Amino acid sequence: MRQLSAPIFDIQRFSIHDGPGIRTLVFFKGCNLHCAWCQNPESQDVEPLVAFYADRCNGSFDCLKACPQDAINRDGFRINHTKCDNCLACVEACSRSALRPIGEHMSPEHLFATLVADLPYYRSSGGGVTFSGGEPTLYPKFIDQMLDLCNDEGIHTAMETCGTYSPDRWAPILKKLDLVYFDLKIIDREQHKAATGRDNSQILANARLLVETGIPVEFRLPLVEGYTDDRENLQDTADFLKALNQNRLHLLSYHNMGETKIDIINGSQNKLGLKTYDATRFAQIREWFTERNIEICDE
Ligand code: SF4
Ligand code: SF4
Image 1 (tube, rainbow, N blue to C red):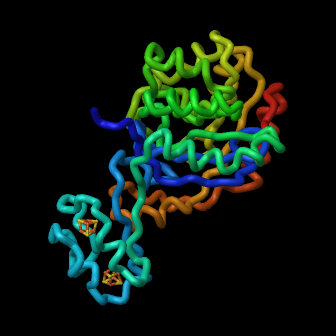
Image 2: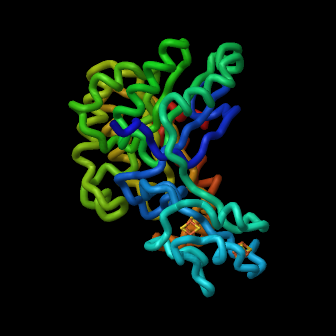
Image 3: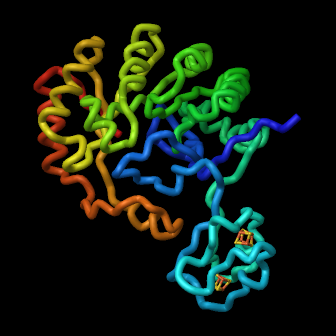
């Protein structure tokens, strides 16, 4: 029988964001939305891959000699991802660290062993573990098992989701979480589809269900100029929250660091050319929600 595993592309320890106390953030690879403004383009595909940092490359082509799959290009982007089987021989061979793996399949036991190293910090700060991505709900069995392991140790657990999961599959798993961060990006169905590649009916239905079932949930709105911050979407978001009797919202500022990551994976995502979200506009939006009795939570 194949061992249970999930692709994980980053683990950030000692975070004081994304939940109470000191936390470890676990980033799962793979997402079922493709937001135009995605700040982690390297997380979108499920499969691990090798990234290429052209500015570090000295042209030695030690990677080419090491590659058993003839997957090293001499010109342009170094890796031919269609031939590459992710053996990582080129990563080992490259003395300049110009090639780096993104994503590693881990078992729940392996991941848990990494997390429990910080158990004293979780205990002393009331912290814990936050599952993020990509989209962690792509891995229900894995998360379910991780939650059992964490709950047995009394570790606080949170999950960040774009809300695209099957409600039936996830109903018993969500009950094991201490907190869910749920993204509301665009309330208008057509605009949501145009910007993320997917209709939001399931997302909004899942948001309603979470509230109805009493699972602790915090809603979040990423502020992206020209995509999510028009007056209509702000009003729709406020109305949606009010209809659910929710009066808290986290605002997330867009930053453009993801655009440089498009180059290291040779990704197809278009560069929007947006600047980091304007602080004045952010403050105005914060005030706008506050005037409507929606508390804006600090990130
Ligand atoms: S081994 Fe590293 S530095 Fe040399 S050509 Fe390959 S990527 Fe560039
Ligand atoms: S990961 Fe392996 S197959 Fe892929 S380019 Fe590097 S050496 Fe070749």
